[in-house]
Each structure stands twice: as structure tokens, then as C-alpha cells.
Amino acid sequence: MSLIGEAKQWIAIARAGDLPLREGRVVVLGSREIAVFNLGDRVLAVANHCPHKNGPLADGILSGGTIVCPLHARKFDLETGEGANALSAEHCLETFPMLIKNGIVFIALPLQFEKRNQIPATCLDHAEGDICNPSSANAQ
Image (spheres, rainbow, N blue to C red):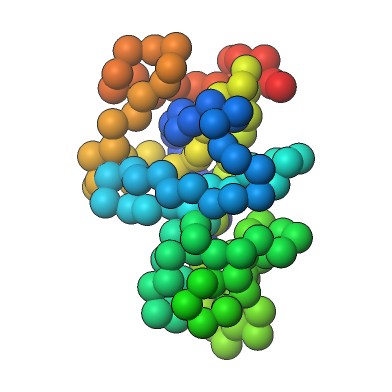
């Protein structure tokens, strides 16, 4: 899934320094689990469950820009969500745009995502429940 051309909101999920290098972490937004990876030069995020047998991808092994599912060693590109030798789009992962501003990591979600899943969109600089717009902040 791509959010290009789709209305989206940015939600603060962590301080950049709290995401360990080359390890996955799970962020729960509403009823969804998203695997977040700090690759050093960028932060990437995909749906946490492998489409094969729901393996927890945040627990997988990073190899360059790919994640290897810990259950059956299926590989996925973290930028595109494409699986190695994927037979169809059903064998690909949902990806999410990420942004780091002023040391805070943001994830972009479709506006309708919040309404469906009742995400508490919070920001470290705003009151709980406020939707944050990081585009007004300075990039790091």
C-alpha cells in the first residue's frame, strides 16, 4: 500500500534515539501492529505480520534493506514491501512513510485510518489527541 496522493496524517511514535540501530520495534496504532526499523541513515516501517504465516517481522533479521521473517525465512524489501519471489501483491507488505523532525520519529497514516482504528494521535510537543504536522518543524 502506498500513501502517495492520499490524504495522510503524521503521528509521533518515538524519539529517534530510542530506536536501536538495526533492530525492529513494534508500534501499536489502533488495532494494527507496525514494525519500525532504524537502519542508521533512515527509519522504515512495514506491517508487522508476514503475509505467509503471520510471523512477527519486528523480530526478524535485517539484511541490508530487507527483513527476513523469523518463522520461515521469507524476505521482504523494507522500502517497497515486495517479497523476494512474491507471486502477487498479496505476498507483499504494507509500507508506511516515515519522517524524523527535531529528533522525533513520525509515521504517516491515511486520515481514514485513525477513524477506523481510533488511534490516539499524540505528539511530544502537543496535547494528547492533537494531530501533529511535522512539516512545520525543522528537519534533522
